[in-house]
Image (cartoon, rainbow, N blue to C red; front, top):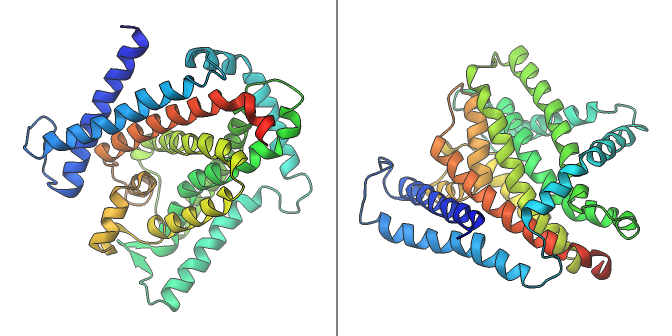
Length: 334
């Protein structure tokens, strides 16, 4: 048995155990222990094992049988690392050209989520009758924190198809790892997030007396999981977006629905059905962890982060495999 196969099996088993415990704690028994064995846990383990095995083992294997690009994942990553200078130069060019002809420049990155938070807070407090305070936190701060991290996933997923199609004139003439196009886009999103995050911290400190705390050390992990999950979706969207032109409007509707389900309301004010939707949505789990740290100065739920990380790695692996298997067909189908 190869080392690659052993690593896949170990990841499947670990992910299955984490997901089984998460499912049991989220929907059946909040006091469930890590190592305790229950009658309920056996079928949950079997179901999640089949799901992870299908996504991590069988689906990538069937994709590679198409023989468009049979090189190993390690070979692709090695080549990508050798082109890191291209990513840096391209990202620098994109950032410079993006704000070259704007009056406010990068200030738009701060103003858009801030103004959105103010408008939503005004609408919900004045017209809907929603309280101006959520879980003892001002609603504007609650919205701003949610928007800043949600926009990372939202932007990566929605801009994937546009980024790949917009670079088709380069792809058709010059060879380079095609995932660089998406990585440059992710770099832009992360730069925007860093600017927004700094502004959010300053606004929270000046106006709401919410200050940085020791749990900020977990924030890079939350952002990393969010990027991994969103990039996995982006790889899939980028490829199928070339085949299906109607995919972008559908994605916009889905992301708008996720926005209303995850950003606007807290778990404490949600109905039982809404809590179930929050529990099965990894974006909501990451957003809740981000708010726990930034707004409430408490550590994130470790099991929720572990579950979201398992989903993110699985989706990234499958999405990247799909993308690399079909990258030689981009010009053909575009």
